[in-house]
Length: 266
Length: 266
Image 1 (tube, rainbow over the protein chains, first blue to last red):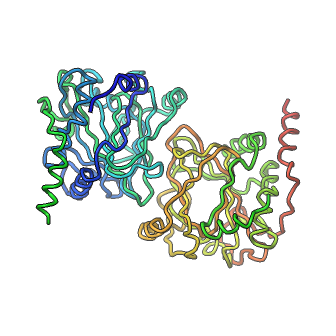
Image 2 (image 1 turned 45 degrees about the vertical axis):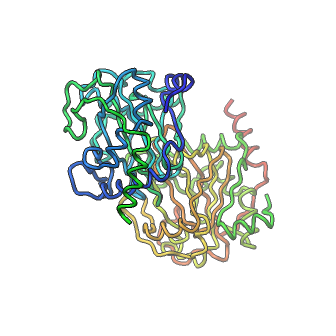
Image 3 (image 1 turned 120 degrees about the horizontal axis):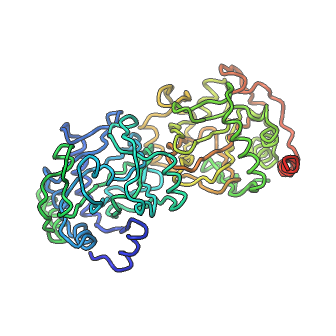
């Protein structure tokens, strides 16, 4: 997957790119199965909502083959190498559950704010890629983005350790109101396998999910290798210290694995 | 406003009817102004979220002329008289704020469940009419309805006094999952002045609003006069005891008042 000049321009202006149906259902079904199993695990990498429902699981690519392949997938790696004009490594890897009925809010924030403050990342030369494992609908807590907000750099933020189980540097209402007044809000929706890439400084959040439809996504944060983190304060399985450039696997790797896995299971 | 045979059929089958742009902006602007003032009042009828933001204000039609006219508006009264084949009275009148950033969840519930259990209403011959005061968007906590769920009668429910400031008889996840499996979820959106009517047994809820866009609606519950409440346990300003049939005002009443009000303010 190669970005076109138009896509480069759109990303620069709007701060995000959306690719409906980037992965096939056959590839995604495997991710969904493995994610479900991982989110049930009782291990330090799996964080829960205050209700006990799974909220997020870190570093699945380090202990699960399906997600290892996803973290090396050329459809995700290539566009980022193009955008940063250099190799990339995995800074963070999350499965965000936004569970049916219980998936709680993610307050408005910028990711690079956290990477800079908590991990000592020098520049916003890192980016989130969200791969939809379930259909993302307007009603099941879609990611909401504030287009063009990435142009403001790192905004001042307060550390929210109260509203949810996940501590986050969040923006105040006045700032969000101002940015939304300029750029509006978009909430890209689509089938499983759709991919959303957005700038590390793009303001985003998501409302709770009160529907019976889970909204699981894989969140891959890729960082330009030269931009590796300098002063990490978070555990290694949250903010990785392995800065080795990712070598993409073949484009068919996930599909091949899904088919082999199916055969093995039969 | 008269319902057509097709609308009758649709209401019977789906449990709701949606009328985009039923009121003009000139009529709605007045409602919005008055609602804003009322939601700031420190009086027993105004309930707040745990955060302090306004959640709901009861009985505004008893102390505010704009909302008195709304409670007597023929565009709302006539269809209900048609549906129930008799006169109606105001059982409940609420301004639901779903405030920007702070509007909290309304868990899945049926309204008639509460009217029956808490107010002693004999039959589900009462109905909610929601009048949008702000634009309702997919992102600002729209009402979500489960089509056809009204056909199941009163479902068993638990009394939720914990998740929000408003005690509510709410449905469990298994029930909601089953009903959504049959009927799906709809979240009607539209401009201020749009009107949504739904059956007292229609399952509905709404997610929190984390956007800068408030989502204020007027909620008018009209009950067939013969179906007046028998064993009220809630205060008179929540579940009214005045069963006098409503005499509709002229269709232009709200507009006339808005214009007179404007002149007076100039």
